[in-house]
Amino acid sequence: MAFPDPLLQTFQIGRWRAHAIQAGGQQLDGGAMFGVVPKPLWEKRLAADARNRIPMGMRCLLVEHDLGLVLVDTGAGNKEPEKFYDIYGIENARRDGATALEDGIRAAGHAPEDVAFVINTHLHFDHAGGNTVRDGDRVRPTFPEATYVVQLGEYLYATHTNERTAASYFAPNFVPLFEAERLELVTGKQVVLPGITVLPTPGHVPHHQSVLVQSGGETLCFLGDVCPTAHHLPLPWIMGYDVEPLVTLESKRWLLRQAAEEGWTVMFEHDAHVAMGKVAHDGKAYGLR
Image (tube, rainbow, N blue to C red):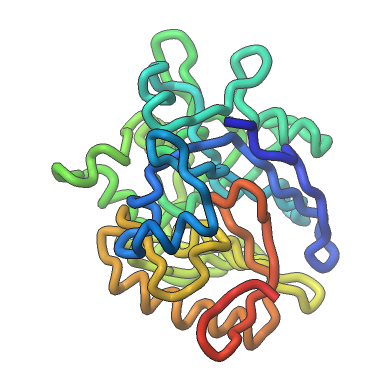
């Protein structure tokens, strides 16, 4: 699989400089990614490989906020065995054992140590794996000066898994943060920093959150897995991975309606090629303008 390009896209949100960082490539089963949508429909948009996998990205958002660097999601990290990365088609390794996320932060003119806040949409391995790194026999925060923000309900859900959810939640990605007292656990919609709001968008998991960044009359919504790619903008195009797909449907319905009515820019975390755009409804379905 070709590594998704570009590594870094820089843009403005009002007065803040921001960066979309492609933290690696990923390949997941197309049927799982599109749920009940028949393959003859989704493969017109994304061709699958011989293993029925489609190309995906792991895009993160870095905002140069007045109070410090804010990073939204952290990709898959580098703590898992090679077999794991092969199964999920993850390609994120870069120089000196780092991942594409660290390279992207440096390409934006910063160091990982400069990150002041990390917001996780949820704690699945491809969104929170880069929260921590292995350092000898221990696992430590990747961003040692950062406060990590996640929904309280999501942390409890991630630490009390069942036979279905255990394959997505790996304790080393988040428990060391709790033990190091680096976690800020929030409940519901909250302004976590001036101009940055976490917004509950349940369905993929019960306590999933999207992130609103608002400055100078402009709004960017980092969607997370409520709508992972631009191909998932039609309301019924929902992942088979979602634990509550009908809840996802309602989250998408009100979120995309508001995005279209208020002219938000939305960012897609898993789209290998389309980083962001503005949403419109053509009378039948949502799509990009």
